[in-house]
Length: 302
Image (tube, rainbow, N blue to C red):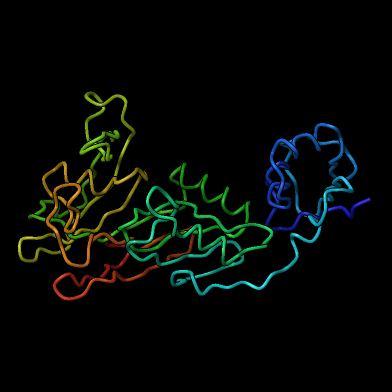
C-alpha cells in the first residue's frame, strides 16, 4: 500500500481534486475515478472530489499511483526570473511588476509572471498565485498568495472591497479638474474594434445595462506642461478601468494610444504605487524619470 499523503499548510483548504491534481500528473478523469471507486480516502474515510482537505490530513491513494508522496518534498527555489520583491511573509509576496510583463500568458506571448512562478517554485506543495492582476503595460505592486488559504482569503477580501486598497499614480493628458477627491462611476463593456481587438466602452447604468460597475476616486496632484499627475484609488478592478474611465472624460493617459492618449517614449504612465493589506502598507515608486518623475503623497492625503 502506498504511503498516505500528508496535507501541508500551503495546501490546506483546497478541494480534494485540486490537491490530487497538484500531486499527480494524471487526467482529471482518472483522479475522479480513483475518488469515486473509494481508492482515495481522507483520514480513513471515503471522500468526494470537492471535499476540502485540512492541514495534517492523511490522504490515502491507490498503491499504483506512483511517486505522489514525494511531490510535496521541499525543493530549492530559483527566484532569478522573478520581478523585484517588495515584501514577503509566510503567506504572501508583494512584487513590483515591470511594465511589459503580463500577469498571465496569452495570445502572442508565453512569458508571464505566472509562468515565471511555475518555473521558480517547481515542485512546491502549492504554486504561489496572483490575487489580482495588472495590465501588461502597467507597472507596480502585485500581490501573490503563497498558500491556498491566503489566495482564497485575499481574493474574497478584494471581491468584498474589505481590507485591501490599491492606489495608483498616473499622468493624464490635459488639465484635469479634480483638485479634491472625486468619485467616478461608470459601466464598462467589452467592444471589438480594429479587426477584432478589444477595448472597454464606458457607459452609464441606464445606457449600458450589460456593463460591469466601475468605480474609482481620483485627485489631481500636479499640473505640468498641460498634463496632470493623478492619484487614483480603485474601488473595483475591471479590465483597463483607469484608462477607459479617464479617456471617456477627455483625459487619456500619457502613452495610452489604444484609448486616444499621446504616444510616449517609455510607454504607459500608470503605476500601482501603494497597496494596503490589512494593517500593512506597501509602496513602490514609479520607474519614470525626467519630466515624468513623480512621488506618492502620504496615505492620509489620498
